[in-house]
Amino acid sequence: QVQLVESGGGLVQPGGSLRLSCTISGTIFGINMAWYRQAPGKQRELVARITTGSSTNYLDSVKGRFTISRDNVKDNVKGAVYLQMDSLKPEDTAVYYCNNCPSSWSWGQGTQVTVSS
Image (cartoon, rainbow, N blue to C red; front, side, top):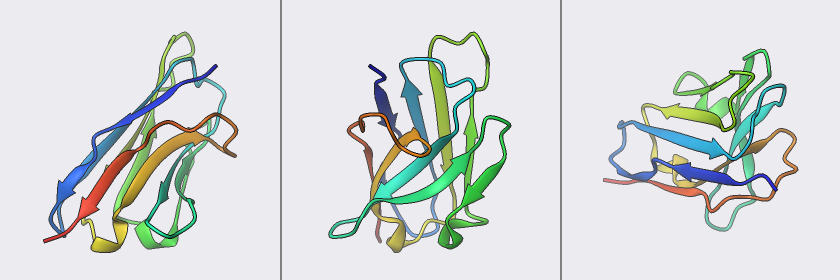
């Protein structure tokens, strides 16, 4: 059973930055990974995706502001995925989750990101 633990969220002013981390209780070598988010009253959406070869794709609204990265060591017993978020906007407020892509693992608890002045 893969476990996902997200961290790094918080309250930040518009224009600020946060770096989210996700620890996976198993190797992610050979697995496409992604960050997702869910804002209040909205469906969960895919924010950023990173392939096994470290190619990336982003939601249009975060392009140029967010950067996804990953640990890609084959023999790691734990995997990690990161999301650097810069120039944050109030509309980025949401609970952020990581998962494989397409998502098939049980969701973690997520980490709350609140962008507000």
